Amino acid sequence: MAGIDAFGTQLKRDSTGAGAFVLIANVGDIDGPSRAREAIEVTAHDSPDAYREFVKGLKDGGEVSATINFDPGDSSHQALDGDFEEKDLRAYQLIALPGDPDELTVQFNALITDLSDTYPVEDKMERSVTFKISGKPTFTYA
Image (cartoon, rainbow, N blue to C red):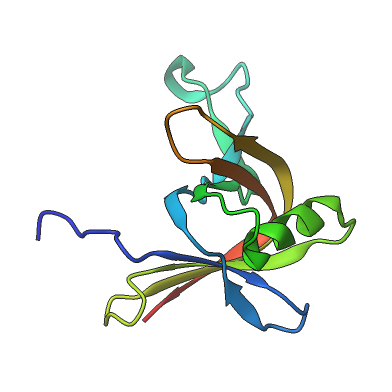
């Protein structure tokens, strides 16, 4: 197969802190998580063939970003304002291919680092949100 259509991917937030995940409505494009890992250089004068040497360092869970067709009256959009203001981390889920045999769920704890709204003259209102993942995201393949 050359590719899989991502249409229908869901972004959810834990509304209670006890694993009650609720859909964030009208989500458009989603990016991430963009995981990264440090490379610690350990090159020494006696490194073989004068090549730099590295060992694995700390990992970063990365970020998830989304663009939302913003509706100020939607409770899931209002909840993101509260998530931005709170001090504690919150759990979120990204579900690709929901209900499909190849479903992928990525669960992560995060804080919102960017919450931006736009109100263009000749287009829809949009909200952009960036989640900074804290700790290790969990990938569950169906």
